[in-house]
Length: 567
Image (cartoon, rainbow, N blue to C red; front, top):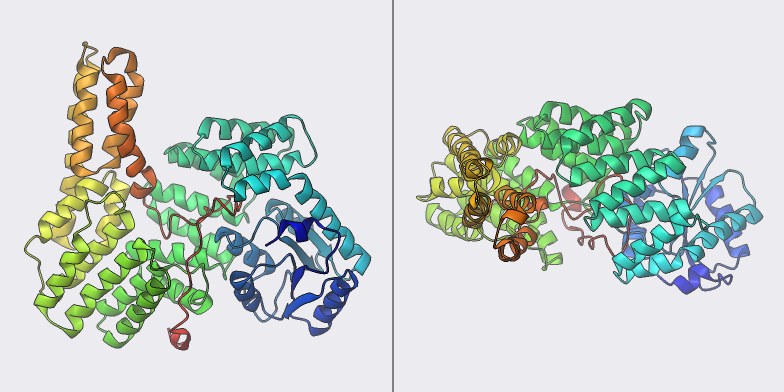
């Protein structure tokens, strides 16, 4: 993608994509673009085809119809999914074309930061005007965008704040980008102040959602919940708010309510691959297998060839096929997972999913010795910092499924206890871990005991510091740090940090302790120990797509397209 092409008045080198189900409309828009000097124009009739082209290459201009009669996906949902996957460069001009002029549609366009919104029919002059307007805004914000793509995020945030404070042109766009940068940089107080200032200057649903997202990232879902409830009362069709409300309820352990929120979200956007997968994953862990399978299989049909497709979907579907004794379909999902991992050799996450399914494959097609050998490779990294909650869930699922085949590893209980001490840091986390273990009785007992042990450990470590006696706070921090390092429990490490911050002036070796704690806080970041559904590196719902800050999307699994219609 070239900024020079986007910012130039000469469109002869520009590339364009036109997506519209109507043949004559596509032809008219193609002709209008040629009038502007665009020579390279690709036309498609389906949103799914547009998705494939936009994932495979970059375009300078995209004209996309809002409605596709033969598909359940809309142009808006396509745009949201592409941005969530970090697949639209900041320089691309994306214009939605539609016959609808309702307030709801215009408001939706504003919320999604569309570059333009054109009502049919329109002239070439009108199209040129919309492109010029989008170009003008990108010129004004080019320095910010370039800093983001260069990964100079702090400098970009400073420019956003300056533009907002000076009310320079497009200050509202700059404020939204700046708040997103601050949120992702964990500058939570600054992000909150910017969202609040934006609400005072120009009330907008995205700013209200931003305030709730700040609370979520700060680990305060109880504060995010009322903000989201109020927002959804006013904006019941705001799908991003539904997503964040569901996430909040998951973190609070209110799983049945979270399922309802995810259902609202998927009902609003039935072709959103990301939402179908999150909804299906939660249903899976809560034991609602029929709902989970229906949602996850739908995401396979819609997105198996998409870079937004999450490999965890294949993992869960393969496990379900193992559970109901369908080895042929299990093997097909396993092959799909292997293909996805091979296309993304740098992904440790996908490699661990393959290892999990390899254990089950050995159980089906080899024998107990080979199965236990494969299991040893899966359990080996459980004390590595990047072994996350999702990996723990998959390991527990494998252990539970092996038990149904009377394969019990000799160190199985110790493995469960290790996972419990690390990840069962709240009842919400414990419930999801038990769900992943298929409610296996002994495993659930061990996980609940681990959760109780962690809570007791925290209470015992903090008790002396509550007395206020000199030196007790420092001892509490040292105890918490030692226990946190031993178990790799992020909650214990974070508690040590908070005690240190609160009693810093009373702790003689505070600086030394801070230097010891900080590397562990970085290594075990809270994201690894929250009940995140799906790839935690994907942009969170409601966030602004910041290509350069968003993680690179995975390469899709293209094999198995032949069986996507059969599931």
